[in-house]
Amino acid sequence: MGEVNDMAPQALTTMRELDSRTTDGISVRLLWHEPDGRVFVSVADSKTGDAFDLEIRDRDRTREVFHHPFAYAAWYGVDTRRDSPSS
Image (tube, rainbow, N blue to C red; front, side, top):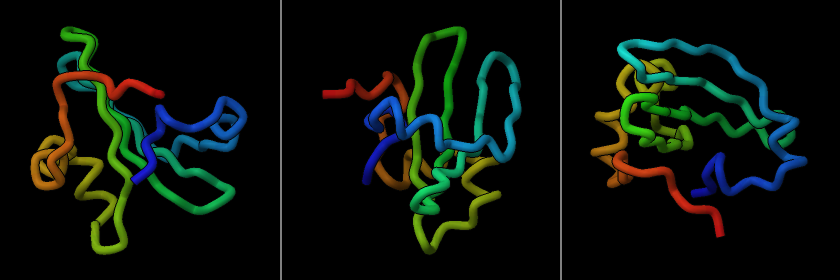
């Protein structure tokens, strides 16, 4: 699963924000990667500096992931306590 943070800088210019919300310092963005149609939910916590990304999978309900990203992160074993390093 590719992560938003792992994409080349030129690829980020093709990302489109479909929706966003912020609650208690936690910003959640719904992003569409136009060239290949992949959709991501990107989460950043301004209080802790933690951040993570989730790629929407075929069986996922996009709005459910957008509204409950921490539940989906737990389900898929994504570390929500840090920003994934790009190598």
